[in-house]
Image (cartoon, rainbow, N blue to C red; front, side):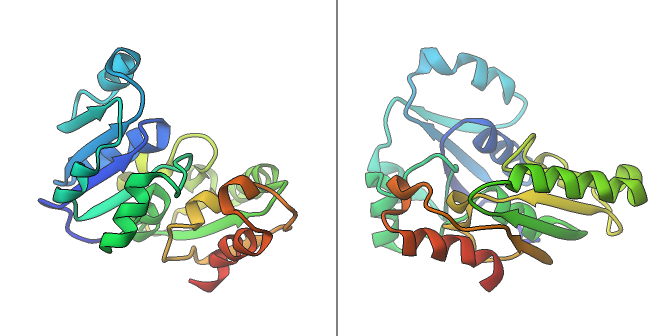
Length: 210
């Protein structure tokens, strides 16, 4: 696990993944800015939900000025990589990560990752249910379904097992793989995000290549 103390992290998107990552990073000493396009009035409940940690909020736009004080950029899964602030971050060579990547870096236990164009939620859930027959409460299922597992990583033990559904959106930004990886199928999907079938397939294949 890296030392997050004093690291300046910009998280784009304040849905469940962004909130979970912001909370975890802030608790581990990072200086977190949570940026969302939605205006302040729409985000009151979200701000209240993570008011127990010190997070700076920037709402209503994605100003490029935020990149002036960033060590790491973490776009949430729904953030398009064509967003100007993301494009500019790539130009400046700012490192990228996300909640799944950081979870895999921090997890003390074995991990299984499942991706595919269809069936990944069913398969992840099924593998989790089978594992629980042998490991009971030592199995953690999440990732792109349910609660982000970053919420629970600090309580995990070395003999636990974490099973994650991982989307192509998350894989786009990742540089680490789970211990066991499964790609179920590849059919045309999310081409509005990836542009071409080749780019989409490349994103999925990262689950095996990293």
